[in-house]
View 1 (cartoon, rainbow, N blue to C red):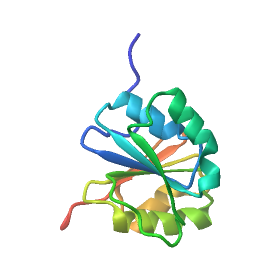
View 2 (cartoon, rainbow, N blue to C red):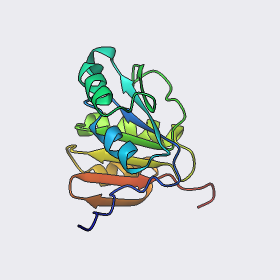
View 3 (spheres, one colour):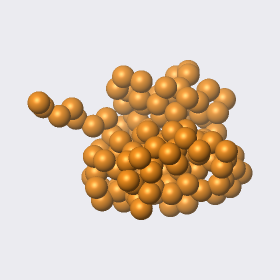
View 4 (cartoon, rainbow, N blue to C red):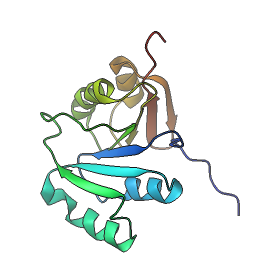
Length: 146
């Protein structure tokens, strides 16, 4: 059976960050595909009960950690890719700008299952190579001078 091409290429990324909570599904999928990756999940501690169960079930606790964080006020730790899911346009725009500020050059943003014109929001924040595949919109932070 032929394997499907990934929507986001993480070969050159060491750490990904899931922002805002959830079940860790995106992080688990990425870590299973790319064994060199580590992941940080940012958000309220109450959100991560389901994530902790899924992480333990997949035996990935040594590569995924959760971090209590106010995603609106606290700085983001260093990561080469940021993942979001289920954002409204009012949430997506400021978080896209914050990700743009915190990502390194060539860093990747992926927004899944969100409302509104996410591609336009990412372009407005400064991301390049914005693409839409199914329900995922991705972008790349350009290098200086690009």
